[in-house]
Length: 97
Image (tube, rainbow, N blue to C red; front, top):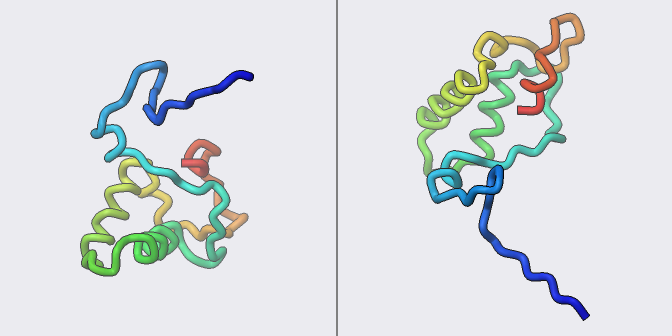
């Protein structure tokens, strides 16, 4: 009989990561369904308002969405319609981010 023991320690490229890594990363579901008639900005705002605490002021949620769009270089696409086939689609890495 062999017993395998797993450690809850998170490693990236073989190196343990501290609490700052945990605070700056998150899980993003790849299979989210978005309303095809809403813009990228509207979709992100909708998700932020649903997922963040009710006690968080809306202005803070909006600032957070804009900062994430800047970080992911999505600001130029903020007014693009999510389900539009006529627009040049964002690159695959952006879609997955």
